Length: 338
Image (cartoon, rainbow, N blue to C red):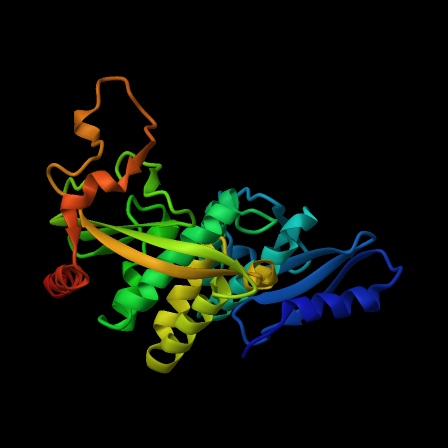
């Protein structure tokens, strides 16, 4: 059973009018704990309230502190329950609050008893706490859009056609802060996407091109041309991947959506990206191995930290791989990982 918290909150706001206090409507009545969509008047503050027996809520529980939200318990002595309120306190986070709320409802409703419901709620809130640290209410920056487009273009054109859908989506590790954008077994792949003709890329992390602990490390440069009103948009490449996953492996689709969220992409903000199209001019694979121009952590002088640098790809010409060789290396890594 799916719900729309946004429509429930809208309905509650209209019904409340000038009446002060909390106004609540229960959702997912079959869940092991009571779940309420709520608004507080005056101010039309939106919230999600989870009510569980006091015995299911540990006394020493530590509630996450998350940007844009207030998370706090209220003890209802007459009912011997605890109400855990997740309230939106910064309206610039309203886009993501609806997504967060529906995610929490789904997670809680799928549990089997009140104790596990509370455990899953707190665990999920801690995950959201991390996601909200880097969330930008105004959406992805231009550089973030370009970077995400390149990662998803590579996923769509090179991994999904040659791997099981779930394996391909699991390989996309960029949204979770990994050193490289993709990892398939002991093979890592770093995607750099540019919209200028200069053959330079920015290496923002000293470990991005450091192959320590890896069997192989491949750098992919995608050269694109930005076109307003034409080309393939970020939204379109996402829709194409979703369609492929829905037809072949819905569980991979769910994991993909989680990755998009971790990357800062919200469907409710998709209109902000609709006018920016990308035409992929070319792409190049480089095998990053001994002799490739790069900095590696073990060779830095003592005391040097937080290294970022610009790489001129012309200096890596001798390490260019054909598409066929790159695909063979990816295929080999995928089979070795099974």
